[in-house]
Amino acid sequence: MTSVVSRFDRYPYMLALVLATHISFSAAAQAAKPALTIQATYPEGDTGTMHFAETLTLSIGAARPLRVPGSFLPIPGPSFRLSDGRFLLLGWSSTGSGMQSMHALLVGDRAGVMTLFDHLIYDTDRPHAALLVRAGPDGSVWIGVPEPSSDFLHNEDEWSLQYGLSHKRHLLIGAIRKLSFETVISRSDDVFYAPPTKATPRTARVAWVHVTKAGFRFALR
Image (tube, rainbow, N blue to C red):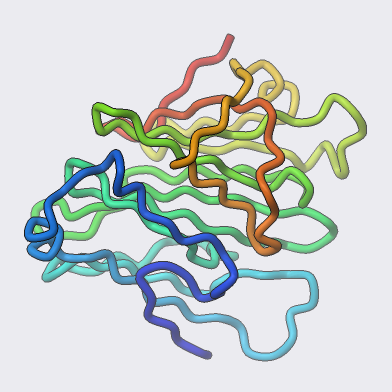
């Protein structure tokens, strides 16, 4: 296995930006707060069109590290410190066959133990694989989930959206289409995450997911 320790990403060409204009801390306060550290191990040899981490371990300061459960774990991307001290970590994985999974993990230190508060996974075809991150002036953070095209979708029966650890929601393509999508008016501080190609923003409409204290929340129509 190979091991990588990174605050952001294994791949240098992926977008790794911090929403400093909206999640505001003084330089001294930022320096005093422990950073999110990521340790990932990857398969040895050529995995073809499959891309994933075999293990993913997250830590903040002296808190007991978290080994993220599951298989085909995300290759870590950019992370964002939230106003309450937790972190939003983005990542991606692929099982091949033209499909890709976009991940958003909400993690933080709870009573000295690194904790996974929620994990959103959006399984789509590769042309639709992206997430948009936006911060509000009040410190709130939102994730934009791209709307599926009304045209042909590759492997439509494999599309899904999962979130919620205590009350898990698992939406298939029919339910995904019923989400409340709205047109995006781009802002200069938006973070458009579309690995591994670092594509230019191509998302016209998204369903907004609010990052709350309880986890990820958004409403059906």
